Length: 80
Image 1 (cartoon, rainbow, N blue to C red):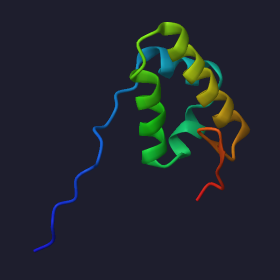
Image 2: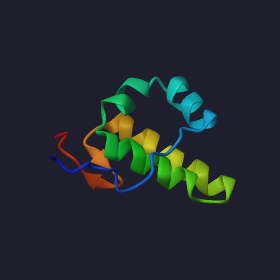
Image 3: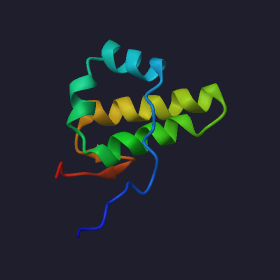
Image 4: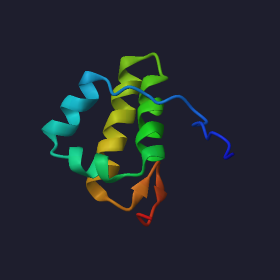
């Protein structure tokens, strides 16, 4: 019998303001194309901070990286 694999981290919910920002910038498709771990990491990174200005800073970086492509959390990413 195969062991049941569980995610290491809980799956993060997407806040409405993130959903709206993705739609406004036309980046939902780029977001959805990222691997599940990246989508979850971005949401965790945004959700875990308490200050709204920090949330907005993290959101802006995520949006910029999605728009640029080839970048994930400030590091080069080749898309595979």
